[in-house]
Image 1: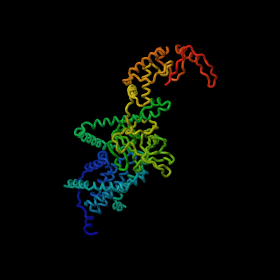
Image 2 (image 1 turned 90 degrees about the vertical axis):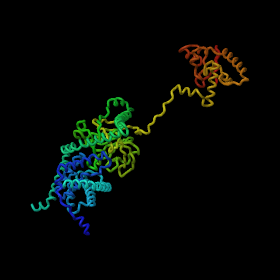
Image 3 (image 1 turned 180 degrees about the vertical axis):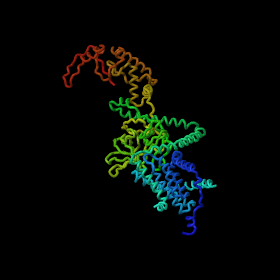
Image 4 (image 1 turned 30 degrees about the horizontal axis):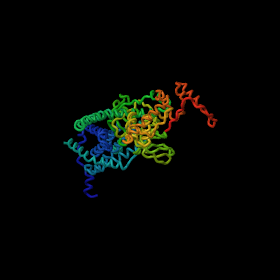
Length: 182
Length: 434
């Protein structure tokens, strides 16, 4: 590993107390907006079921917060909120568990890599989408005994699309963060 | 111990959170209970916003389209669409009921049975689970909706109600991997299970020996206790023998993923599966109405089509001209060599022909039997080829006429000796020849 890449991967951003400036109501509002978009967008624009804004939000806060405890709790909150809008044949807690793990691992990864880099953000967004979808499918089969199909190719494409959406979304959230620190 | 916990604090919390959620999951699965409180809170928080967004979208985008593009056409189209859906539902019901009219008591069954009671609803949102196919509709328990009710469109089935809230309900679509529907084929009434889990819809549990044709329709069998019997499900697009059971792929007619308005069946009524193949709307066409009787007569009389028609027409004219009734008893044989009055005669032979005609007419008037001069005989001439009757018999009236005719010429068995009879008093009319 040369100096440049090592510098990119290990360099840490300046610590900011931005998360505290994201007040709790704002955090709640953003989560609610993300869930409503996921709930309503497919009715407005067909074939947009692949967009996982709550997951991207969990990944972003995990990467930026760098606190595993807070990130896993945030992931659990977003997941349980999503679960409450899931079909009644899927019990509450499936998304909760998956997103708890995503939040925890995102925060863990953020301590190893420079998460300000767009490339790393894209790769991590894609990875966490794939992990989330695969883990959810495993849980439905193992815990609920529901035989549901898993198409790796489709998941791969959806992951790439979500990673593409993550670039502008994370930039917008970055601007909000900077505005909060100002 | 404390040092260990503080060192692995994050991991410990993670494990606690995961285990807590797993236990909560296990509790739900074990008790088969739906956590209504959490879901009611979440749905109540989200659906009003979704409803507001939907209303804004409908009233802004729809408004602009109405006034700048198609001025009020959208509203009319929506009304007509709703009316059309309702009429199609009625049409399906009545068509299925009429198919049972062959049975003796079909009429009483038809009168006694009432169509399914439904309530219309609009789809306002999707589920948050990508792989699960579920939608929310804007009708809830206040509209009489209950869990397990079937959701359909006039074209086919859509899904079932899985959760009911005061103002909205959640509908699990038939395309969900966990949804199974009992179906029945139209021709052979073969029962199977519809499963749309693998991306395409398959009808399972049908043996290879059963005959299923491509294009055959499947209807709900009513065995799943969700959908009433007789609702259209879809058409077979491929049917191949598989390992043990047939591999049948179905094209759903209801298009559950793309519906905007649905009907929730509050009280289902089972219907008979029609025997006749389901008619495609495009194949129906109206033939022109048949011509009326007067038009048909005019068409027939106006122009003879063949040589035989011309001859018949000519003979008719001759018969009228000479007062001859074909098949009439006592009517002299007409002169078929004459030309009808309407025909163009050669100028040279015109006088001689007229003279001849006058003579013939006078002779016919003299030799014409009395029976033909009576109005009754003219009005109802005897049938062509009938046995010649005597003058005495024909002059009799009413029921004695037949008896006299039978007495005068008894019917002898085949091969019986025939005795020569004395000639009757009256002149025996010559049977007409044609």
